[in-house]
Length: 256
Ligand code: BTN
Image 1 (tube, protein in one colour):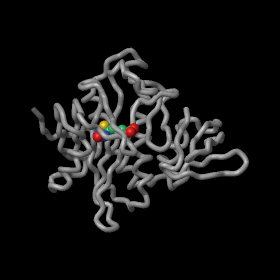
Image 2 (cartoon, helix red, strand yellow):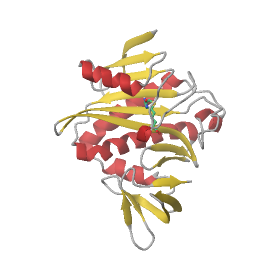
Image 3 (cartoon, helix red, strand yellow):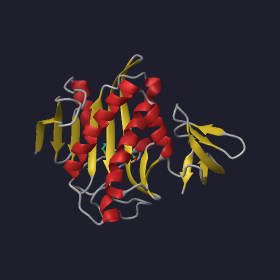
Image 4 (cartoon, helix red, strand yellow):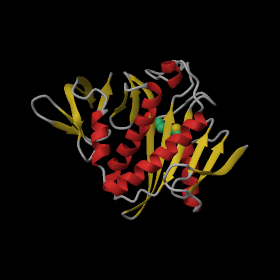
């Protein structure tokens, strides 16, 4: 039913081994990974990959539903080594790394839609859901859940999804993609610790969806026509043409 193996990465992080747990089906890889954390069996770098999620979780309590066997649904457990008020650094580093990986398949129209969506043109190729385990102020674990549309070509009435296959016409090996991305993310997190956030922050802003464009955002009942200027170091969205206005996660909704 499922496979647990140790995978060795050829790139740094050195020759470390990571738990690689591959499941045919599970409710949510994030839930499964959280179970490992609570059972005390997770390590930094542990992966839970499922070929089918029966109750995948999206951002803000939404459901993340995808066709069985067609897409990437996986979670990476990490020890962040940051303060919880630096949570945007982890998210942005992961988002930039996923975008860079996607660029190799779908080209430079891959972007990051604030705060944690991956886009191609104006369509969604994937999303990130990070869940945290804190003890007091100590940020002990982060579960980085990533869903990418890879080989699915029909999405029913979902609003604006797109898969790598729809963009390139080619089938992609989901597990191979996951292995590359896992290595890239662990390397990026090591770089974040060693050299700091600046280059990831710049990369995030450089590839920010609709940057310097006027867009429509919704704040409660108000519709704003405003320009996207970038994000600040705390991850707030900077908007505005003459006066700048910042928004935190969840404060505004995109109207596309
Ligand atoms: C979003 O865009 O709403 C975030 C989607 C995150 C989905 C991934 S799939 C793997 C991991 N397990 C989950 O239940 N959710 C995340």
